[in-house]
Length: 154
Image 1 (cartoon, rainbow, N blue to C red):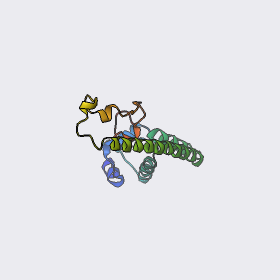
Image 2: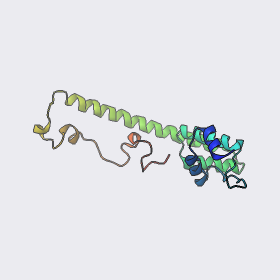
Image 3: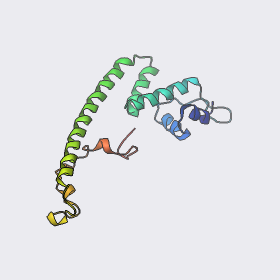
């Protein structure tokens, strides 16, 4: 099957499939006499695996590691179980961060209920935000970053 057919079968774009090839997630397919990529059923299965693994929160590097184990005919389940345990721990941390963030927002909202204009009480732009006590750290709001953020790798 051609790349357009693989794209249709998996719901991905041809560009994404070429990206996965370049990243080593999909092996370079054989070429037809006219130079077209020639995919087969196993490629559909592999792309389906990649999509499911991404949905479970695995990075492309983590997925590549699983696929490399598979390609060497090594067991994958122990490695995947370890990755899942790490993801659960990460999620627990994010949940705690979100709960703290929710409490901060509720407190700020409650504090600001009677304010119409907060500039007279010391704000340059808005004292609610400026005096919020929110700490600015690179990872403090990773969960709030839009998908495709330049610093994120999906």
